[in-house]
Image (cartoon, rainbow, N blue to C red; front, side):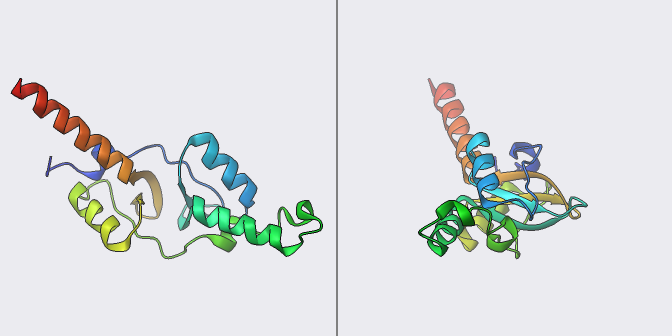
Length: 145
């Protein structure tokens, strides 16, 4: 398992969003796809940021607080670009999985965009790593019996 590469277990194709998307659009996409983070890409498909479910929720609450008497009036006030993190920690498909896990622990994040050049080719998350661990443990347990 220590030889496993990010590309072996990453989720792909990546689900991405544009910086001009509204927070409501980001929230709907995350709900629909059952994910907690989205790489943000520009018109050329280059990675420019990442937005998490908590970023979106916080942005939506700020947006609603902006006009408590007409909450729908400011619904599209903030965009993904307004709440995304621009400094993104990334890995490549060739990155050893243990290094990706170490980066997540070091930066206290739950997922990393997987890039080749500036193009996002997938995502690796803590859930992907947990699934691999459970599979390995199950295989070892079955082999022992």
